[in-house]
Image 1 (cartoon, rainbow, N blue to C red):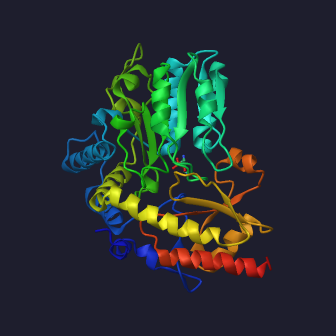
Image 2: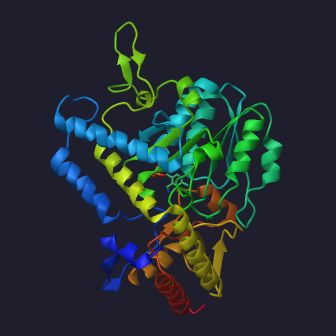
Image 3: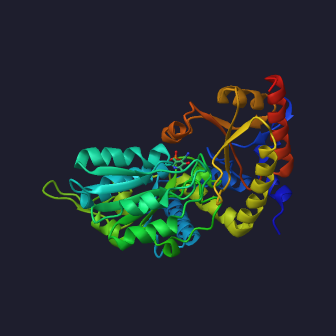
Length: 406
Ligand code: PMP
């Protein structure tokens, strides 16, 4: 049984007081909190086993190496990849997408080719493709969304032709909360011989992911958005593609033999892991995923779904609220404004009530342009949030309405 009070006990930060008020943390889309066991596991490794991985013959190095490879297996199982060779440790979603844009781009993109993204992408799933298009004289196509925050699938289908080489799409939008029809888009990409990358940064903590069922060619996510540490993330890629892609960064670990005449490269996944990784962060990520698994993503998803319904119902009743993103299939993120109030003021006033939300352009300037606003306020939930916290948040919004005499 999902027991939110028991889960909250695993997150000491949730007992903090902000200006004497209980913390209501609703900035989970930016980063989630870490449970005690993740911090303890990392502390244990720093204090007892710290040693560089994959290099040493000694006990500590082997201990850390084993823990890292065990974490890779935990990730493999979590996303149901076929092999750990397909699980590459990176610094986060941003680095994972850049890696693909660079190396897949090197091997597969030619002048005149097309890459499709959507209007609701995070900058991390726009700019690397723009840079690639500039390098290769390729063309970026953008699938628009309607005011409810749903992709225009007609336009998407109209874009599909033999010049398209890759479709890049967020599973869940970090601004609109829309759960995109990624499976449909992946299948459509494959039908014309293109590949598909899923930005899973806002999905991995809310939706059970099976990369083999999705059949995506690449899947990217960050540890810190799934109750793990910062500085570590994952790129999943299908083996046959990863094998055809050249390495990205050169250095230690990614090589087989180094000669001045010619260097040969390591096997997967190490070919893409140059230099010393954040090996204790990797252990922390494995622990975070074990923790999530112990609660169950299906249970988490159901709980969060109920919480979202509860929040959306209340927030809709606030007269001056403007909601951005009202897709039928919506998860975890509520972006909004209040008529006549700058989002920065909204965030600052809520902060004084102990409520942490995000404001600004949310790393998605095209979404701001779509609605013609300079910024938004965003509340984003995690498995440890409660109905009482939603009440405090909505009560805060009603107080702000009164302050501004709306
Ligand atoms: N994509 C999406 C949808 C995101 O929400 C984020 C983080 N806000 C990113 C990519 C980038 O993640 P990171 O900064 O951890 O690399």
